[in-house]
Amino acid sequence: MVATFIYWGVFAVLAAWGLWSLVFSCVYLSNHENGNLWFFAIINTIFGLLGWLFAWIMSNTAWQQYWFASKVQPSAWFTYLLIGYLVLVILQVIFGREKKVQTA
Image 1 (cartoon, rainbow, N blue to C red):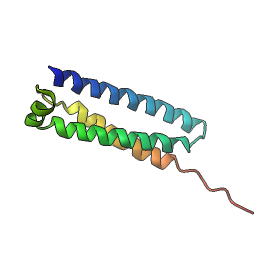
Image 2: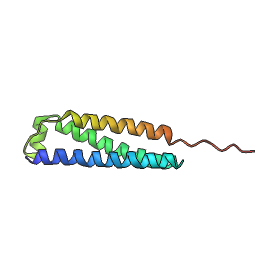
Image 3: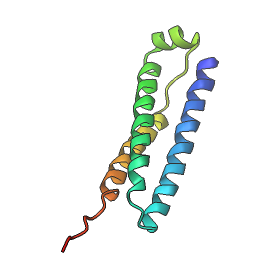
Image 4: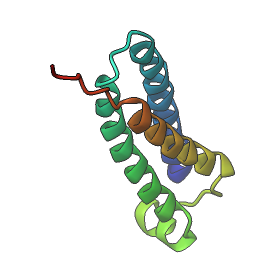
């Protein structure tokens, strides 16, 4: 039972931060503040790596028993969320580039 709460809690936190990041990325993009997207790309990379590590641990039932003393069936939604993070980071890196100012 503990693994279930932790699993869906981590899913909820990752989903909430991903949505928050997406909304503010759109705000910064519309305000032409592209440099701020790099901050979100770095934070989303860290969250994505931690999410992949968590998904790797949760993919093995024996590891779940070791870490959480219970087990849960992993959902495909978690994988879709992590793929969404990857796409979001790539888009933030692409759109976060600022044009160089031409010197006279």
